[in-house]
Image (cartoon, rainbow, N blue to C red; front, side):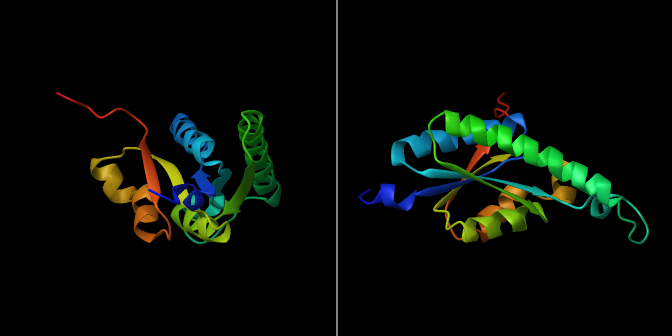
Length: 156
């Protein structure tokens, strides 16, 4: 595996500020420590009007969107500081859009060599209806994707 360190210069880690995202970030940090990588934290958010069941478009007040973005920026800054304090070079990207599209676009934009992300482990109807952001990223990303299960597998 010669040249592997050159391949993981930039590790992109999508975060939704959940415990599963934190678990994936620990993996990203472990790899970054070995390979001397930079970590890019990415969060995707959608305009609340798009995710509310409404007939026609009735967007929230601009103040509400600004409040949402300010809250997300605060959370992202806290995560960035924690990663930086752990000794890593870190950048962040807070982008509006559909999660898998944002992750794929950000990976290209930042020239990521690896994406490390959590899976939420949805199954059955929930998975069929919502799909999987991780599955779509794996299918469409230009670089390797390491997925980290959010919950341990159920064994019998």
